[in-house]
Length: 439
Ligand code: HSE
Image 1 (cartoon, rainbow, N blue to C red):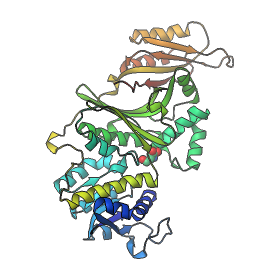
Image 2: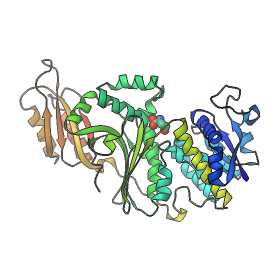
Image 3: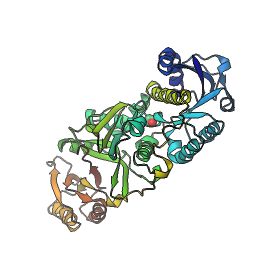
Image 4: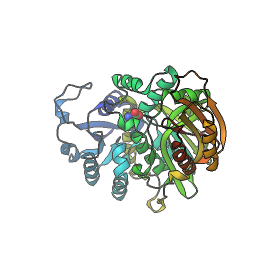
């Protein structure tokens, strides 16, 4: 049986999972592939460190160049994360005639175009299934499974940390900071959680998915991104009363000649598919013009789920090597000449329903003043919710208004005007309501 040599750079959580899978599933994979995958060299910063996997000392090196320049290695797996030296390693591997596999969404979001163009020019494969949604095969689904479709929309819960926090806040009534501390203790949230809770991780992931689905490069920094730090227990409780759950959504869809791509917390109907994805699970809901609505659900992180996606890519690349068909599926799943530059939609143009929570003085004519300003901006109200007077005298009370569909620009201007009212005693909370279930 033929042998295909693999090199690995990075032996952290995911790298360890990849080694375990390659070791434990060696026979299963050989039976499916028709060749043996042999992990020849593993580069890690601390080759001497004890690990959860057994590797012969001779296989380990502290020098990534020993992987990149090994003529026998056909596939290089990069799992070190970050921008540099990961970018240089991948470009070097491609230039050395190797195929590459990476889980590095941050790198792809920033330098994906360069890496994809280099791989295409050199007719080498670049696998990146593990960069979005951990073990969920979303990249392959968009690139291959749904290749016969125009994508109508992608709506996802694509960050496990924030989904865990929001689920706990909803189901156990805990506050953001308490759940965050708990998530950190359990290893679900990073010591510096800002990348996740500020929505940056989700923006990088939806940038990649949108780039594949719509054949246009979407820069993640240009995406409107709002995290979950402003979502309070109060908002979650009001949302529940109104029949919604609060989720951090990452979304992409065509809006006329523009691409509407955004990440922000949103109210989703409590009986919708996405509302019921809880804990660290990720879900990607896709609508194709022929296939209709689909949803993929699974573990978005972790050594073995993410390792499973990495090894899936390695097998895919190996199949192409065996059949001399490398580059069979272009990195973005579009031929170069049909890639476009579709501009992103200005956030001010977005139209949706809004949840507005005002903190007001409990006195006559407050509601009329707010409703008057909303009316002046052509914003029509669907419902108003105010709790009974159980508050401390003089302290602000919350008033929640649900609007009919309105344009973001109008909401923004109306809220600026409302903020100048003397009866407004705190920052107004504005959450968008997303109807994710339309056919
Ligand atoms: N930090 C990510 C999450 C997992 O919380 O979903 C890796 O992409």
